[in-house]
Amino acid sequence: MVCVLGGMCYDDNQKYIMEELHKLIPDLDIVWVKDPKYEYELPTWMRPVKWHSWQWLYEHATAKIWTNNWCEPDYFVKRKGQLYVETWHGGLGIKKVEGDMIGECATDRAKNLFQKNASDMANVYISNSDHLSVIYRRTFNYHGPIWKCGYPKNDMLVQNNPEEGMKARKDLGIPSDHKVLLYAPTWRHRFSQEQHIDMNVYDMDIQRLKKTLTNKFGSEWTMLIRFHPKLRLYAKGYQETHPDVMDVTDYQDMQRLLMATDVMVSDYSSCIFDAALRRIPCFTYATDFNHYKYEERGVYYEMEELPFPYAKNNDEMEKNVKAFDMEDYLKKWDAFTLRMGLNETGHAAKDIAQKMADFLNGKTVTWQNDYPIKIP
Image (cartoon, rainbow, N blue to C red; front, side, top):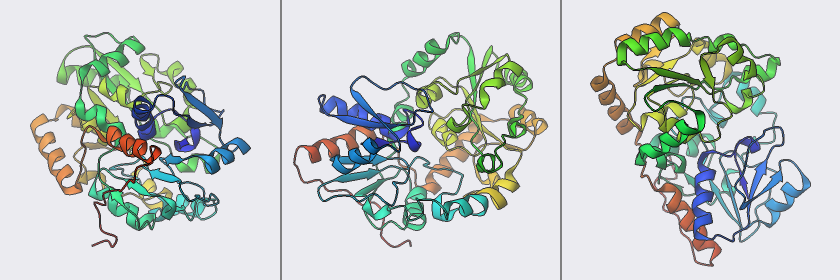
């Protein structure tokens, strides 16, 4: 039984774990929870089940293994003999999560079914950093093992095989001699509250940026934008007003898309940290930081603390690109990862899948606990 972000996509850590588990046990019945509002394909060897259906409840009750990158509902009861592997999805994320959240998000969280998080049902939480491990202990009130083995979705980025990027370029029809910019901003919680999407927060002048990138780095550029899955239904008109920008929101494999990227821009999405694993230039562009920090959700860093040059408007964005120094940027990135205690091995998916296979084969499985129960 697998659930990723409420069934919105076939992506994230669970995708890569399941693909490795399928290699180990090809005839295993693997169930993926799918929200029918979102259209995406699943492998033929995977069985979909509708999110929030009676079948969904049945599969949870009878599965040998659960794995999720979000909170399991607190009305689920894990039976004796079931294994629950929680990976979460944020890594070195900027956005505060669950019990750490403030403002509008915290108010909504207090009302929903996930407020208890059911955290101690998990047999293990998967982490990629000390930063994330501290968050697990505090915000999820989790007392079990935390295995800092790395994030499965980042294995591809650590291995950095250029053929993965070429596959994405071929899928999207991007010329092999073009450089690629990917702009991947995140969702705003207030959009769901107000029933209105304010696209002004995504007002980065991509055509102006394209000229600046050409002057700075040379080459021809293909400009991509990928909205958060929750914005799929609202972002369809974007390309009509931005015909020279390719909307890749529906491209299923975010990590392979990052492999095709030469320069990354985001606001508060954790995908910018994933992209930086490839040691490519990454920039932040966010016009509403104070609102996001104090009213909407809360943040774990000031933007200036990050190794990515930060812009609040298009003038600052142009200035940051013109002044970009790769050597200085990589020094800041390396210092940041050291401070966060980052650990990405490049084989996390295989390691986790092997543990699952051992469990299914009746072996006793133990989980390395890389972080103390009490926060120091």
